Length: 270
Image (spheres, rainbow, N blue to C red):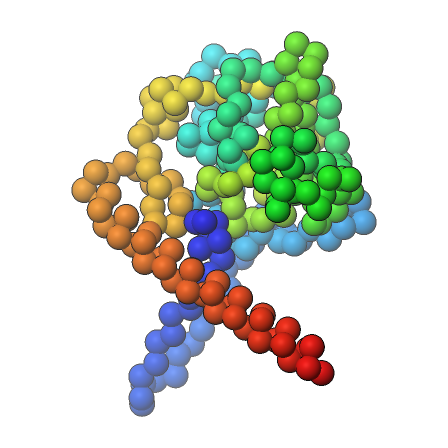
């Protein structure tokens, strides 16, 4: 729900009769490494600066935990992923976490990695959410419409596929948020960067909630579903704003549905 809300942000327009002409500020620059890129015959769009709000670009940071260099640490609670480097450093990526990703516990190894992977919903996904997944029962080839994005790392445990994936995404707006579906997703540009660093056999560990709070601090969601430091005094305020956002979204969806019905009627008459 909140991912869809973020897609429906309204523009605030300021106007005043007789006011001096407004000089528009130059558009914010796309951070290096997030420009549009052609890869495998597909043109991956640039990540727009506004999409880094609450989900910063990848960055090399200090890392003091005992995880060995060359390993991946996923923090689903802080929505971050670390690729551990030598010398007490790590590359930190922003992630989105789906329901499946929240169910991933413990550790695994990367036993398969793919560029522009194909995707097929599991039998359980089709059974529990047929409206969403039944149409893709035969699979979906790799490409810009594929939910696994540009790259995928497949996690195995004791030689068996866990069906958990670390992958790119076609929905940049979802990064930094909890999502209704999927595992651990990154911006496509980040998925490509991580893919080049990772070798088969790479160890992947998931932090516990207690470990996340100790290292990242206690967090909570704002009215748009982005993580912010926990502040008990803002809980009621955020809940009220979230309710307003949800009501606006529902109204917009109803209006779009009605417009679609009217257009269908026009097309049928024609």
